[in-house]
Image (cartoon, one colour):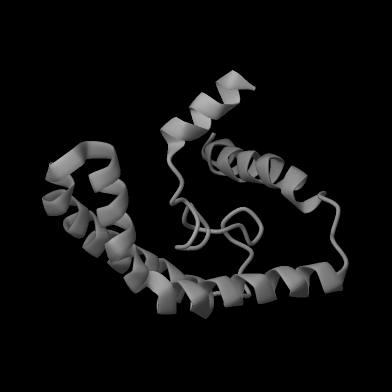
Length: 128
């Protein structure tokens, strides 16, 4: 009975990992390209992370009014640290295909994305 209890988790792990091994592999050029993009994205996010301070201030003032002048810089400071740490992790571990096969670890992918007003986008899409 002890052998069965010891082999059951091993069998379960084996059954769960077989589909991951059976996935179709990509050509080496595509893998290297994704690694290069991950490295570039990481380095870019480290150097441009300081732009989160004015970005978050602007977005918070736009969305919440005058209280954004207090909350925005605090959000900006937090996002500056977050984007800088995530960028350095991506730059250091650019060869590791995580998360989700070299997908970005932070949304939006770069600091210059995400400035647009979501309310005006919804209005324009409803009128079209």
